Image 1 (spheres, rainbow, N blue to C red):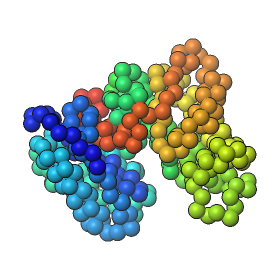
Image 2: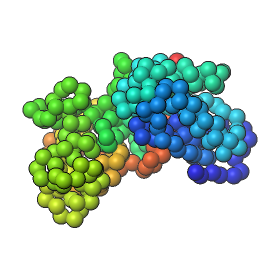
Image 3: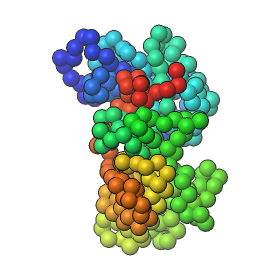
Image 4: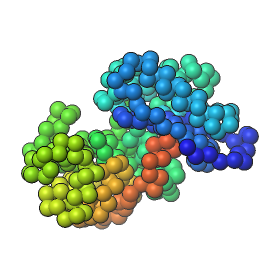
Length: 322
């Protein structure tokens, strides 16, 4: 938990929430995008809907108290999908406790009179990085999260682009290998099917990496790659090339300034980013496309929380649904 003293009593503050498959993070964020207080709790993914809801409500009460219970300007939420947007009815794949759970409505009932805004967690990462992170000052930004899945969000002309169903920028399902592996979405060769953490581990294990370690993770894969393991290094290069292909497609379609990459898999650093950069250079041949900057997140794990807060604090740029 973090905290700061000396906040102006009249400064706008927002409750921000980042709901993932393994943890829920909540924070009070001030008008400058700074976290005043924050807490985390495990996601009770296998419990009943109301048990998970109570855990979230208790977390919000606790973090608000930690911050000194300031007046609130609203509530912003990033949640793993899928969801119906902008209604905020959520059915996270890895959270069976919630199926068609009316998250936005329940939060509105709990905080009457305040704006409550719910968007995809990867969209909130993109918003946070555009508002206060690595994409600040750039008008055309793709935010990408490479983790258990691969998601993203898209800012064009300085404003979040939602698309017809709130899924604009969902870069994880750009096809990078047309005859590639099956994807959880039902397609083949999507970026997520190649570069997500579970996909990396599966590919490497099929080629002899840690065959007797069923609990090995993408973090273990990255460590072995750094230690010189041939298959582990090849898995990360393959993922980086897939990211580069996806970026080349995205920059030609959207004329981007910057791509910001975060998520657990992105933390492997050079093996992923170097391969992505080399592949992008090979495929992005138009002059305008060669301007693209590819950078890691500047806000780290706080990106999603700060982006969720921005749905309220900078709603003129990042919320167009009501």
